[in-house]
Image (cartoon, rainbow, N blue to C red; front, top):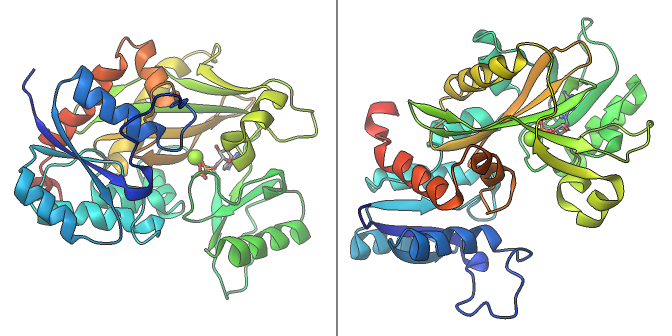
Length: 341
Ligand SMILES: Nc1ncnc2c1ncn2[C@@H]1O[C@H](COP(=O)(O)OP(=O)(O)O)[C@@H](O)[C@H]1O
Ligand SMILES: [Mg+2]
């Protein structure tokens, strides 16, 4: 394996400390950064320089000029604390003519908007839930074809921000209340979707043109009461004591209806391509009791900490963590912005 110069871009407040003795790194906020750094440096033996990024672009330019990296490993999820600006940093890397890991800016833009991405997927006959957009400062009318139950979400936020049990609504009044909540408290437009009662599935993919799809993954909700909706709310995703109490777990998918095991990877690859993604991504899906599958969204640059879903599903396919990080690097080096932009 060739030794590469890798510039690791990290939010400045997530740069792991030099000395981690006495710290449970698996619980640290900077755990992904730590795992990636350690793996690049000590397992893959690359020459790594870490850059803690603040709200300035100049240090990025300087580091690329001085260090001349073969590739930038991009772990930034925001700039100026604005989540949607992450795509602009990647655009900047392209302008600097740097290879970078993860998704290209166009894919990030297309995937971020939960309505735009569904429109694109629909064109490619990828099944998605029916939806309508509720814009701020505009009156919302539910299209006649749509009925309850519905789920109300932010049009552009990620990580289940603004998603709780109250997001699933059964009547007009609650729907309007929840739309107002998204507008006022989350501060974005809202998307109102047909609620898909059923199982929650994920599929992790790495690559650009030739894609590697890892085994289908499922979120299990063991101890939830029948009155609760089995959805990945912010609490379900981020609160470990709540996860324990309600038996939230993820793992290799339970048996699926006939044919789906083969169809899901095909559908996920089509979604990845329809949204022009590159690098690596996770596709979120729902499966209803009739065996109908719906793609909810695609997540470019998902969480890649060792032991989290992406790495676990890769591992299930015998792609161990260092091999996964190396694959992500390779995809970054192979991606040619000028041919794909
Ligand atoms: N149309 C839907 N039907 C059923 N559950 C949904 C629907 N949309 C979202 N959810 C639930 O909410 C979670 C988060 O929604 P998602 O669209 O993936 O947004 P985020 O970007 O916050 O992950 C999903 O993982 C799923 O559990
Ligand atoms: Mg999601």
